[in-house]
Image (cartoon, rainbow, N blue to C red; front, side, top):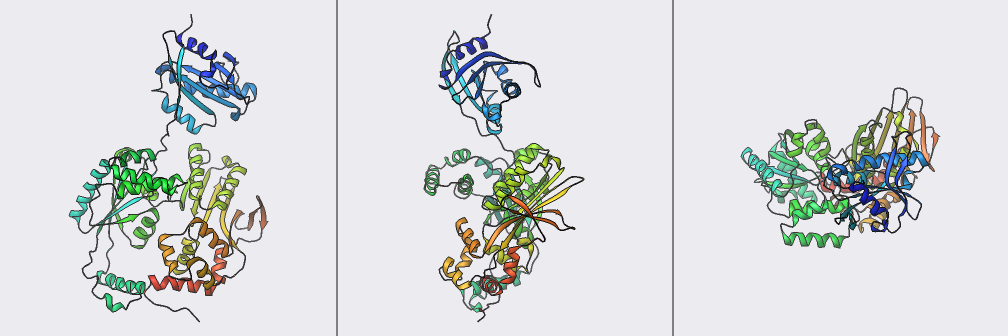
Length: 551
């Protein structure tokens, strides 16, 4: 006597158009003899109009549906082995009356597997005839920990206000529906308060072109903040942020209209807009004596490195408390953007044999280099053309730039500090081999004229360069400036540093060269007049001395 699943299977097999008009039945209970897998009986094997095999698995209860994904994997491998079929020539379909236990495993398979899969929830009558088949839309599966690059930076003048701020953050994050966050508590470095105020007078004088005497005493009553709460939170989905914004109908409507008007092409831009509005526009707000915007580079470079704020405590919430293997150092590293979330900096390592981490790392590299197509494609070629599984360790460092002029200024005004030099370094090694792939630059030797350059990009006003440093420039403008400076991106391979066994990537192949070059450093060293005028423009606004251009 047939069981219920067999009856549903036979009813479906006789009318596959219920789920897809292109499916043509091959057989039911299709037998695959034992080979690398155990012998298999596929509920329904069909084909589509493109001669792809279609594996259809039928389930009727939550208990049996738990086995569905396991069986799809098993049957897929059986089909590949028996008929020498490619993964791209196989489709899978799961039919079930119950989806409670199946939905998440199905969604994970749909999001991560190379096999195309569809799911249908069916309704049957008393005779198990199929009345209706509703297609199941996979949900977005959890990617684990991913801190948003939109950070909160709140300042406090005393310990009492700091404690109020901590309680405020805990309460308001929960009210806004953000349950996974970290509060980084910092204490300001000791410094000469009077000297700091005098320096501010000089900066304002330089910035506005007004005599310094006009600002004497202007900052005497300025509050000096001794404590900071710098907070980061787990990035949510677009749908989850919209649900949070629905608490304020006006804000929700305006946000939707703004995002539609901007017509963002990048999902990260949509997420950043939603996060800024959830934190900045949606009441209530965090208690603080003062607040500033926060982002990874600011935390790493300005707050920690330049201003020397001291981290005194990390306060975690929810799942981040439960994760006992997650260290404070790892959280700080990710807050600095070293995991690639800020799309400019990445420091990470893995074993290529750790498949999920290796795949994740390649995806992170693509995100970090999304504004640098050349290096991004070069690294893709390197990953595609090499068998990295033979290596025990892979180390990656990336510092890319969205603003080449700002990179040049930072290198020069910080005494030719190479920590601001854009590059990437990909090292792979085992006990026998060690190779390094290095992202660098070439320069064509042309020397740009500063005045013509300023006229073309900054409306003949050098001061607009400072606006560019504050507000940024577009990706297209940055690429155009890059080309006008005579710069291009390059990739080198280093097989042996001591023996100078060097190669450069040209026309998708590595060709041997005698030395490693960095065209950006060559450009800086060979264009003294251009660099001087660029740096003087910077110094006139940010440094104490007012300098005139050389005649």
